[in-house]
Length: 326
Image (cartoon, rainbow, N blue to C red; front, side, top):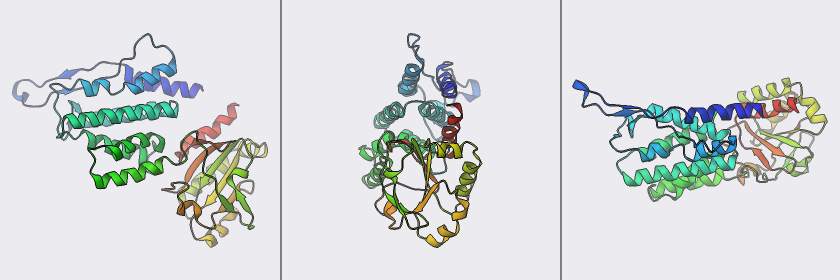
């Protein structure tokens, strides 16, 4: 909890400190565009609760950027007077803030951002604001290699793109498909159940596994990143105790076709894990989970509700390390 509050405090400070400064070139440089710093959100002093301050900062993060646009130009390098590189940096800080919040609050703030972007693009059809923020959102939140990867946060934005009259109809269909996939196995919802088979031919079902938490991992024996994560998990000294006490179960499932290669790799997996494969390729065929890249890591609670979805490696290990403090 202390670590979360520290992250949250840093995120809030980064959006609440400082005010906008603008400067205009003079003399021979008068023709240059007016440039300003990003106008930070100012949280009312009456809001003192940490979570309430975070909610306010997230919901109003972009207010002044989009409302104080008069006399500030936009071109290929500047958006409403703020350098594009700074806008991207502020977007990154925004994502950090949302990551530290309740996921439902984060999704609300992302939906607010999309509505502002859509309104700004509608008001100025020649602007590149929708294209720019769409690129940011996809790069940070949906790229499988992004350390910020978070389909929960990307969903409100891509859903907005799918439904916006500003989106080309052909592209809208693609966005709708992505939004549908992002909605699978959402935070707080029951994870999709499925059956799988272990190396001895025994069939298991996800919902039959009894543990207070489940690390669900979709992996591949030919995947270097998977091997690295397996090695890191094996190196965690607390893992055997977590598993033997019923605090954690590791469910490691192979969902591709080379079962012979998977069988040869079994010696690399701890025997206390529940290792198996999808014999009918149901998970991919029926799109029970949108596994866009391997490995894909989920954390489920005892009721199989999703705590983390396709989470970056470091988030999962932070969660596992937190058991040391219990």
